[in-house]
Image (cartoon, rainbow, N blue to C red; front, top):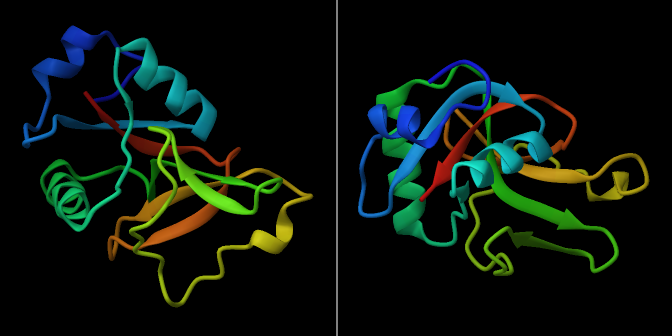
Length: 139
């Protein structure tokens, strides 16, 4: 799906349906813009809080072909609290961090960090929230 933050009806016409409804938005936005876009459609950025959800996201990315190398997840780092949390309010218990990637928590003073999935291997990485990427919404 491309274009500027599209209507929910446009999204539903291009929806890949899983037990939880996931949609890949092939539009590059900052993490905050992606969150706003999902919420404007009565959805949210996806919280990958289980191995099952990780599998569904992997299948979605295989079928839907992201147009960016990374895809935003609903994962955010709080420098103040020193922890990662999901936009659904859960703290991060399950993770799939890339073993070859530094999550850059020492860069707290520079920029807010958010979680993304690397499309080439489906592992998570930490990116500055100002980077623009595709994103996954969940209904």
